[in-house]
Image (cartoon, rainbow, N blue to C red; front, side, top):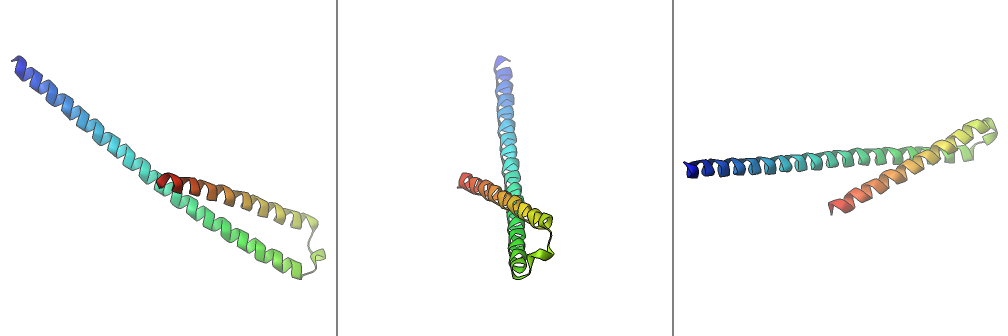
Length: 105
């Protein structure tokens, strides 16, 4: 009888260990999936930021060819602020992506 109880206890313990290992694998897989999704979103954000910067650059080139007296100082300052904000966001996103890629390697 003692042998039978001991056998069932070991079997139950093995079942728990296997269940815990499977749970750890599931959590690990979920974390990896989340990390990949975050990287995809950051890549989209980076691409969008770069397109915004490209548009602003072309717009600035256009403004340089025109008489800037037609544009208010507030407008030009706001454009410069937007450009600065996008540059900062672009650099931050690129840095985050570089860190993620370094961790993945």
